[in-house]
Length: 267
View 1 (tube, rainbow, N blue to C red):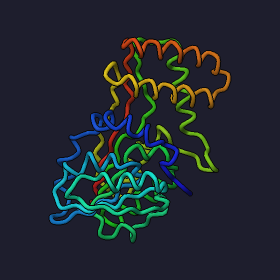
View 2 (view 1 turned 120 degrees about the vertical axis):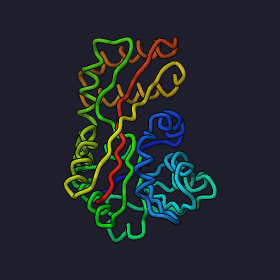
View 3 (view 1 turned 90 degrees about the vertical axis):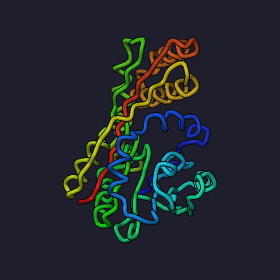
């Protein structure tokens, strides 16, 4: 099984980085810092993309830190390793993150991931949780979609597109049934079943006139995925998208895209 962020263009990752940073829960940092060992930290960032999690989290953790940036896309990895804030150091690890074991995590102080869990299967989550618990390694897993979007003004097609998008997130891809918006709950239950203490906090994207470019790009992807899942929505979906993009351009549209952050602490 292969999980990669290569489907995400660097431009899209750059566009969303500000919203991601504003959304991530800082409330989870105190229990995380209290759990971490003293001394040098080794942080493994799964599905790191261009390294936005490292850029956000590294200044918020005690120094010194060494990061292992894990992804399957060498272009994204090159950007990530070059952008981690000093004095942290980093190496790249080009591999399938679903194959990580407890032995691979030996000596790791923290596992992180951002916008990752919805790309995993139930089996992937079981493997990730088992590896972390075996290695007694905490996991900070941020920005997991939960399938709820609130747009203002409301449109009659909002709920229909939301349901179709969520079904698309749960699709079978290359023989793998993705968890999509069920991923955060599945991950929490899996870690807790292995004895870990799991903290959960909301981490919503709040999109509005100050982020029109991101809002427009997100809308296009949201509607496209919904129409791919339910082709009969194509005509109405394109008309909906036209209306929404006009509202976005005029600064008249806001959207709250709900996510959650999880912190799993092996007991």
